[in-house]
Length: 382
Ligand SMILES: C[S@@+](CC[C@H](N)C(=O)[O-])C[C@H]1O[C@@H](n2cnc3c(N)ncnc32)[C@H](O)[C@@H]1O
Image (cartoon, rainbow, N blue to C red; front, side, top):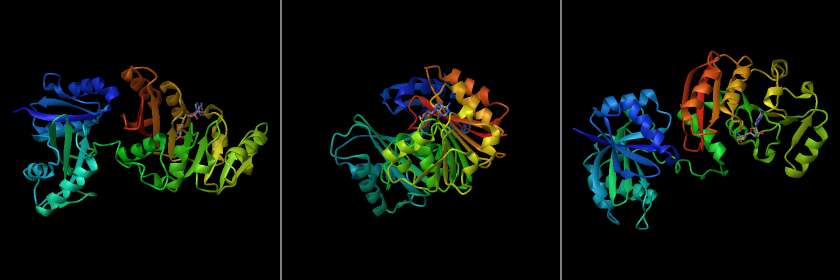
Protein backbone atom coordinates (compact mmCIF):
# COMPACT_ATOMS: atom_id res chain seq x y z
CA UNK A 1 0.00 0.00 0.00
CA UNK A 2 1.45 3.34 -1.01
CA UNK A 3 1.81 5.90 1.72
CA UNK A 4 2.11 9.65 1.18
CA UNK A 5 4.95 11.51 2.89
CA UNK A 6 5.60 15.21 3.11
CA UNK A 7 9.24 16.25 2.97
CA UNK A 8 10.16 19.70 4.25
CA UNK A 9 12.97 21.64 2.65
CA UNK A 10 14.06 25.13 1.65
CA UNK A 11 12.50 26.06 -1.71
CA UNK A 12 15.92 27.13 -3.03
CA UNK A 13 17.14 23.55 -2.64
CA UNK A 14 13.93 21.70 -3.40
CA UNK A 15 15.03 19.94 -6.58
CA UNK A 16 18.23 18.83 -4.89
CA UNK A 17 16.25 17.71 -1.85
CA UNK A 18 14.04 15.61 -4.14
CA UNK A 19 17.19 14.07 -5.62
CA UNK A 20 18.54 13.41 -2.16
CA UNK A 21 15.36 11.57 -1.09
CA UNK A 22 15.34 9.55 -4.31
CA UNK A 23 18.90 8.42 -3.78
CA UNK A 24 18.16 7.62 -0.14
CA UNK A 25 15.09 5.47 -0.76
CA UNK A 26 15.66 4.38 -4.35
CA UNK A 27 14.26 6.32 -7.28
CA UNK A 28 11.70 3.66 -8.20
CA UNK A 29 10.37 3.65 -4.65
CA UNK A 30 9.59 7.38 -4.62
CA UNK A 31 6.80 8.78 -6.74
CA UNK A 32 6.75 12.55 -6.66
CA UNK A 33 3.22 13.94 -6.25
CA UNK A 34 3.36 16.90 -8.58
CA UNK A 35 0.10 18.33 -7.26
CA UNK A 36 1.67 19.02 -3.85
CA UNK A 37 4.64 21.31 -4.13
CA UNK A 38 5.20 24.50 -2.19
CA UNK A 39 8.27 26.51 -1.31
CA UNK A 40 8.53 24.59 1.92
CA UNK A 41 7.58 21.02 1.15
CA UNK A 42 6.96 18.40 -1.48
CA UNK A 43 5.13 15.08 -1.37
CA UNK A 44 6.17 11.60 -2.39
CA UNK A 45 4.13 8.40 -2.49
CA UNK A 46 6.19 5.47 -1.31
CA UNK A 47 5.53 1.76 -0.81
CA UNK A 48 8.15 1.10 1.87
CA UNK A 49 6.94 0.24 5.36
CA UNK A 50 6.75 3.58 7.15
CA UNK A 51 8.93 2.60 10.12
CA UNK A 52 11.78 1.33 7.95
CA UNK A 53 11.62 4.46 5.83
CA UNK A 54 11.67 6.70 8.87
CA UNK A 55 14.56 4.80 10.44
CA UNK A 56 16.57 5.13 7.26
CA UNK A 57 15.83 8.81 7.11
CA UNK A 58 16.86 9.37 10.71
CA UNK A 59 20.10 7.39 10.36
CA UNK A 60 21.28 8.97 7.15
CA UNK A 61 20.35 12.49 8.12
CA UNK A 62 19.92 13.90 4.65
CA UNK A 63 21.57 17.26 4.25
CA UNK A 64 18.93 19.24 2.41
CA UNK A 65 15.65 17.85 3.76
CA UNK A 66 14.56 19.02 7.19
CA UNK A 67 11.96 16.45 8.01
CA UNK A 68 9.76 13.68 6.73
CA UNK A 69 6.18 13.25 7.88
CA UNK A 70 3.79 10.43 6.97
CA UNK A 71 0.35 11.74 5.97
CA UNK A 72 -2.26 9.80 7.92
CA UNK A 73 -5.37 11.73 6.86
CA UNK A 74 -6.48 14.37 4.40
CA UNK A 75 -9.55 16.61 4.39
CA UNK A 76 -10.83 19.63 2.50
CA UNK A 77 -10.08 23.01 4.05
CA UNK A 78 -13.06 24.93 5.42
CA UNK A 79 -13.06 28.36 7.03
CA UNK A 80 -13.64 28.17 10.77
CA UNK A 81 -13.33 24.45 10.51
CA UNK A 82 -11.66 23.82 13.85
CA UNK A 83 -14.32 21.35 14.98
CA UNK A 84 -14.07 19.34 11.75
CA UNK A 85 -10.32 19.40 12.10
CA UNK A 86 -10.45 18.31 15.74
CA UNK A 87 -12.76 15.45 14.74
CA UNK A 88 -10.26 14.33 12.08
CA UNK A 89 -7.37 14.62 14.53
CA UNK A 90 -9.24 12.67 17.18
CA UNK A 91 -9.35 9.68 14.87
CA UNK A 92 -5.53 9.56 14.59
CA UNK A 93 -4.57 10.52 18.16
CA UNK A 94 -4.77 8.32 21.25
CA UNK A 95 -6.19 9.46 24.59
CA UNK A 96 -3.46 7.54 26.46
CA UNK A 97 -0.65 9.37 24.63
CA UNK A 98 0.22 13.06 24.95
CA UNK A 99 0.38 15.19 21.81
CA UNK A 100 1.74 18.41 20.46
CA UNK A 101 0.04 20.06 17.52
CA UNK A 102 1.92 22.07 14.91
CA UNK A 103 0.26 23.83 12.00
CA UNK A 104 1.61 25.37 8.84
CA UNK A 105 -0.67 27.75 7.03
CA UNK A 106 0.40 27.98 3.47
CA UNK A 107 -2.64 29.81 2.15
CA UNK A 108 -4.67 31.76 4.65
CA UNK A 109 -8.08 32.36 3.12
CA UNK A 110 -9.71 33.33 6.41
CA UNK A 111 -8.27 35.31 9.29
CA UNK A 112 -6.93 32.09 10.71
CA UNK A 113 -3.23 31.45 11.09
CA UNK A 114 -1.08 28.57 12.26
CA UNK A 115 -1.08 29.81 15.85
CA UNK A 116 -4.85 30.15 16.09
CA UNK A 117 -5.37 26.71 14.55
CA UNK A 118 -2.99 25.21 17.09
CA UNK A 119 -4.63 26.98 20.02
CA UNK A 120 -8.27 26.54 19.05
CA UNK A 121 -8.06 23.00 17.75
CA UNK A 122 -5.76 21.99 20.59
CA UNK A 123 -8.31 23.29 23.07
CA UNK A 124 -11.15 21.33 21.44
CA UNK A 125 -9.00 18.19 21.53
CA UNK A 126 -8.34 18.70 25.23
CA UNK A 127 -12.10 18.94 25.92
CA UNK A 128 -12.38 15.62 24.06
CA UNK A 129 -10.01 13.99 26.55
CA UNK A 130 -6.68 14.25 24.66
CA UNK A 131 -3.65 15.49 26.60
CA UNK A 132 -1.47 18.25 25.13
CA UNK A 133 2.18 18.38 26.16
CA UNK A 134 4.30 21.00 24.43
CA UNK A 135 7.66 19.92 25.86
CA UNK A 136 7.79 16.13 25.85
CA UNK A 137 4.85 14.91 23.77
CA UNK A 138 4.59 11.27 22.78
CA UNK A 139 3.03 12.14 19.41
CA UNK A 140 3.60 15.07 17.11
CA UNK A 141 0.61 15.84 14.96
CA UNK A 142 0.86 18.21 12.03
CA UNK A 143 -1.75 20.19 10.22
CA UNK A 144 -0.45 21.29 6.86
CA UNK A 145 -2.69 23.57 4.83
CA UNK A 146 -2.06 23.51 1.15
CA UNK A 147 -4.42 25.21 -1.30
CA UNK A 148 -7.80 23.72 -0.48
CA UNK A 149 -6.52 20.65 1.32
CA UNK A 150 -5.43 19.86 4.83
CA UNK A 151 -2.88 17.11 5.34
CA UNK A 152 -2.64 15.55 8.75
CA UNK A 153 0.75 14.10 9.57
CA UNK A 154 1.73 12.06 12.59
CA UNK A 155 5.11 11.20 14.10
CA UNK A 156 5.75 9.52 17.39
CA UNK A 157 8.63 10.85 19.48
CA UNK A 158 10.21 7.36 19.32
CA UNK A 159 10.95 8.02 15.65
CA UNK A 160 13.70 10.37 16.80
CA UNK A 161 13.25 12.72 13.90
CA UNK A 162 13.52 16.41 14.30
CA UNK A 163 9.86 17.12 14.88
CA UNK A 164 9.65 20.79 14.08
CA UNK A 165 8.42 21.56 10.64
CA UNK A 166 7.71 25.24 10.98
CA UNK A 167 11.31 26.19 11.47
CA UNK A 168 10.88 29.78 10.56
CA UNK A 169 8.27 30.38 13.22
CA UNK A 170 10.07 28.42 15.90
CA UNK A 171 11.80 30.65 18.41
CA UNK A 172 10.49 33.72 16.62
CA UNK A 173 11.83 36.93 18.03
CA UNK A 174 9.97 36.71 21.31
CA UNK A 175 12.91 36.99 23.69
CA UNK A 176 14.36 40.07 25.32
CA UNK A 177 16.75 40.65 22.42
CA UNK A 178 15.91 40.63 18.72
CA UNK A 179 17.95 37.87 17.13
CA UNK A 180 19.69 38.25 13.81
CA UNK A 181 19.88 35.53 11.18
CA UNK A 182 23.42 34.58 12.22
CA UNK A 183 22.30 34.01 15.78
CA UNK A 184 19.35 31.86 14.73
CA UNK A 185 21.77 29.87 12.60
CA UNK A 186 23.96 29.17 15.61
CA UNK A 187 20.98 28.31 17.82
CA UNK A 188 19.70 25.89 15.19
CA UNK A 189 23.13 24.27 14.92
CA UNK A 190 23.36 23.85 18.70
CA UNK A 191 19.89 22.33 18.81
CA UNK A 192 20.14 20.13 15.73
CA UNK A 193 23.56 18.70 16.55
CA UNK A 194 22.70 18.45 20.23
CA UNK A 195 25.54 20.64 21.51
CA UNK A 196 25.43 21.96 25.04
CA UNK A 197 27.32 25.24 24.55
CA UNK A 198 27.03 26.11 28.24
CA UNK A 199 29.53 23.27 28.85
CA UNK A 200 32.13 24.81 26.57
CA UNK A 201 34.59 26.61 28.80
CA UNK A 202 36.33 28.43 25.96
CA UNK A 203 35.13 28.99 22.41
CA UNK A 204 37.19 30.22 19.46
CA UNK A 205 35.02 32.15 16.99
CA UNK A 206 36.73 32.61 13.62
CA UNK A 207 35.19 35.25 11.37
CA UNK A 208 33.35 36.65 14.37
CA UNK A 209 32.29 40.15 13.26
CA UNK A 210 29.82 41.70 13.87
CA UNK A 211 29.68 39.36 16.85
CA UNK A 212 26.33 37.56 16.81
CA UNK A 213 27.80 34.12 17.59
CA UNK A 214 30.17 35.57 20.16
CA UNK A 215 27.24 37.32 21.88
CA UNK A 216 25.19 34.08 21.85
CA UNK A 217 27.92 31.87 23.29
CA UNK A 218 28.90 34.38 25.94
CA UNK A 219 25.22 34.83 26.89
CA UNK A 220 25.15 31.04 27.44
CA UNK A 221 28.04 31.39 29.88
CA UNK A 222 30.99 30.45 27.64
CA UNK A 223 34.16 32.50 27.41
CA UNK A 224 34.97 33.46 23.84
CA UNK A 225 38.02 34.38 21.80
CA UNK A 226 36.67 36.17 18.74
CA UNK A 227 38.96 36.51 15.73
CA UNK A 228 38.23 39.01 12.97
CA UNK A 229 39.99 41.92 11.36
CA UNK A 230 36.72 43.83 11.50
CA UNK A 231 35.33 45.37 14.68
CA UNK A 232 32.43 43.78 16.52
CA UNK A 233 29.18 45.38 17.70
CA UNK A 234 30.54 45.45 21.25
CA UNK A 235 27.36 46.96 22.69
CA UNK A 236 25.40 43.78 21.87
CA UNK A 237 27.82 41.60 23.84
CA UNK A 238 26.74 41.71 27.46
CA UNK A 239 29.55 39.82 29.24
CA UNK A 240 32.48 41.70 30.72
CA UNK A 241 35.47 41.99 30.88
CA UNK A 242 35.54 42.53 27.11
CA UNK A 243 39.07 43.02 25.79
CA UNK A 244 40.22 43.87 22.27
CA UNK A 245 43.77 42.90 21.34
CA UNK A 246 44.93 45.12 18.47
CA UNK A 247 48.38 45.48 16.96
CA UNK A 248 50.31 48.56 18.22
CA UNK A 249 49.87 50.38 14.92
CA UNK A 250 46.07 49.99 15.09
CA UNK A 251 45.39 50.23 18.82
CA UNK A 252 44.62 53.97 18.85
CA UNK A 253 42.38 53.81 15.80
CA UNK A 254 40.61 50.79 17.34
CA UNK A 255 39.96 52.63 20.64
CA UNK A 256 38.76 55.77 18.86
CA UNK A 257 36.40 53.86 16.59
CA UNK A 258 34.93 51.86 19.48
CA UNK A 259 34.45 55.05 21.53
CA UNK A 260 32.49 56.51 18.61
CA UNK A 261 30.52 53.49 17.45
CA UNK A 262 29.81 51.81 20.81
CA UNK A 263 30.08 54.61 23.39
CA UNK A 264 29.92 53.48 27.01
CA UNK A 265 30.37 49.83 26.10
CA UNK A 266 33.22 49.27 28.60
CA UNK A 267 35.73 47.76 26.19
CA UNK A 268 39.44 47.68 27.03
CA UNK A 269 41.87 47.83 24.12
CA UNK A 270 45.33 46.33 24.68
CA UNK A 271 48.34 46.04 22.36
CA UNK A 272 50.38 43.43 24.16
CA UNK A 273 49.06 39.84 24.36
CA UNK A 274 50.70 39.53 27.79
CA UNK A 275 48.51 42.38 29.08
CA UNK A 276 45.28 40.52 28.37
CA UNK A 277 43.73 39.82 31.80
CA UNK A 278 43.32 36.07 32.43
CA UNK A 279 39.72 36.47 33.54
CA UNK A 280 38.33 37.95 30.33
CA UNK A 281 34.82 36.94 29.23
CA UNK A 282 35.34 37.92 25.63
CA UNK A 283 38.64 38.59 23.93
CA UNK A 284 38.52 39.97 20.41
CA UNK A 285 41.80 39.47 18.57
CA UNK A 286 41.72 41.98 15.74
CA UNK A 287 43.58 39.93 13.15
CA UNK A 288 42.92 37.55 10.30
CA UNK A 289 42.69 33.94 11.41
CA UNK A 290 45.81 33.05 9.41
CA UNK A 291 47.79 35.43 11.63
CA UNK A 292 46.98 33.58 14.85
CA UNK A 293 49.58 31.00 15.79
CA UNK A 294 49.74 28.35 18.49
CA UNK A 295 52.02 30.27 20.91
CA UNK A 296 49.68 33.29 20.83
CA UNK A 297 46.54 31.24 21.37
CA UNK A 298 48.18 29.14 24.11
CA UNK A 299 48.43 32.30 26.25
CA UNK A 300 44.63 32.32 26.54
CA UNK A 301 43.81 28.61 26.94
CA UNK A 302 42.72 25.63 24.85
CA UNK A 303 39.29 26.08 23.26
CA UNK A 304 36.80 23.23 23.34
CA UNK A 305 34.49 24.77 20.77
CA UNK A 306 35.64 26.06 17.38
CA UNK A 307 33.24 28.17 15.35
CA UNK A 308 34.08 29.08 11.76
CA UNK A 309 31.64 31.43 10.02
CA UNK A 310 34.15 33.31 7.85
CA UNK A 311 32.86 34.32 4.43
CA UNK A 312 35.47 32.37 2.50
CA UNK A 313 35.46 29.43 0.08
CA UNK A 314 34.69 26.03 1.64
CA UNK A 315 38.29 24.89 1.06
CA UNK A 316 39.60 27.88 3.02
CA UNK A 317 37.19 27.30 5.94
CA UNK A 318 38.34 23.68 6.04
CA UNK A 319 41.98 24.77 6.02
CA UNK A 320 41.30 27.13 8.91
CA UNK A 321 39.54 24.38 10.88
CA UNK A 322 42.45 22.01 10.25
CA UNK A 323 44.99 24.60 11.21
CA UNK A 324 43.33 25.26 14.57
CA UNK A 325 42.65 21.58 15.33
CA UNK A 326 45.96 21.08 17.13
CA UNK A 327 45.30 24.11 19.33
CA UNK A 328 41.97 22.71 20.61
CA UNK A 329 41.13 20.42 23.50
CA UNK A 330 40.57 16.73 22.76
CA UNK A 331 37.11 16.00 21.42
CA UNK A 332 36.48 19.71 20.89
CA UNK A 333 33.38 20.50 18.84
CA UNK A 334 33.56 22.18 15.44
CA UNK A 335 30.70 24.15 13.91
CA UNK A 336 31.59 25.46 10.48
CA UNK A 337 29.55 27.23 7.82
CA UNK A 338 30.09 25.89 4.32
CA UNK A 339 29.41 28.75 1.92
CA UNK A 340 27.88 27.39 -1.27
CA UNK A 341 29.74 29.74 -3.57
CA UNK A 342 28.08 28.05 -6.53
CA UNK A 343 25.36 25.46 -7.16
CA UNK A 344 27.58 22.43 -6.89
CA UNK A 345 26.60 21.28 -3.41
CA UNK A 346 28.28 17.87 -3.75
CA UNK A 347 31.60 19.39 -4.77
CA UNK A 348 31.65 21.71 -1.75
CA UNK A 349 30.60 18.99 0.65
CA UNK A 350 33.42 16.78 -0.64
CA UNK A 351 35.98 19.59 -0.52
CA UNK A 352 35.25 20.55 3.03
CA UNK A 353 34.98 16.95 4.26
CA UNK A 354 38.28 16.09 2.63
CA UNK A 355 39.86 19.28 3.99
CA UNK A 356 39.24 18.38 7.63
CA UNK A 357 39.74 14.61 7.27
CA UNK A 358 42.23 13.19 9.72
CA UNK A 359 41.73 16.10 12.11
CA UNK A 360 38.01 15.73 12.79
CA UNK A 361 35.54 12.83 12.84
CA UNK A 362 31.78 12.30 13.21
CA UNK A 363 31.18 14.81 10.44
CA UNK A 364 27.56 15.77 9.78
CA UNK A 365 26.19 18.42 7.48
CA UNK A 366 22.81 20.08 7.40
CA UNK A 367 21.07 22.84 5.57
CA UNK A 368 19.57 24.62 8.58
CA UNK A 369 16.54 26.88 8.19
CA UNK A 370 18.50 30.09 8.71
CA UNK A 371 21.29 29.04 6.41
CA UNK A 372 20.93 30.89 3.13
CA UNK A 373 23.19 29.56 0.38
CA UNK A 374 25.24 27.63 2.88
CA UNK A 375 25.30 24.48 4.97
CA UNK A 376 26.38 23.95 8.56
CA UNK A 377 28.98 21.30 9.36
CA UNK A 378 29.40 19.63 12.74
CA UNK A 379 32.43 17.53 13.69
CA UNK A 380 34.57 16.50 16.65
CA UNK A 381 38.32 16.89 16.91
CA UNK A 382 40.01 13.52 16.75
C1 LIG B 1 29.26 36.20 7.92
S1 LIG B 1 30.39 37.16 8.82
C2 LIG B 1 30.32 36.34 10.37
C3 LIG B 1 29.09 36.62 11.16
C4 LIG B 1 29.25 36.25 12.61
N1 LIG B 1 29.31 34.80 12.80
C5 LIG B 1 28.12 36.80 13.47
O1 LIG B 1 27.39 36.01 14.07
O2 LIG B 1 27.98 38.03 13.58
C6 LIG B 1 31.92 36.70 8.16
C7 LIG B 1 33.13 37.35 8.79
O3 LIG B 1 34.27 36.59 8.41
C8 LIG B 1 35.37 37.46 8.45
N2 LIG B 1 36.51 36.82 7.77
C9 LIG B 1 36.68 36.52 6.47
N3 LIG B 1 37.90 35.97 6.26
C10 LIG B 1 38.50 35.90 7.46
C11 LIG B 1 39.78 35.45 7.91
N4 LIG B 1 40.66 34.95 7.06
N5 LIG B 1 40.06 35.55 9.22
C12 LIG B 1 39.17 36.06 10.09
N6 LIG B 1 37.96 36.52 9.72
C13 LIG B 1 37.62 36.44 8.43
C14 LIG B 1 34.85 38.72 7.80
O4 LIG B 1 35.63 39.84 8.20
C15 LIG B 1 33.42 38.78 8.35
O5 LIG B 1 33.33 39.63 9.45
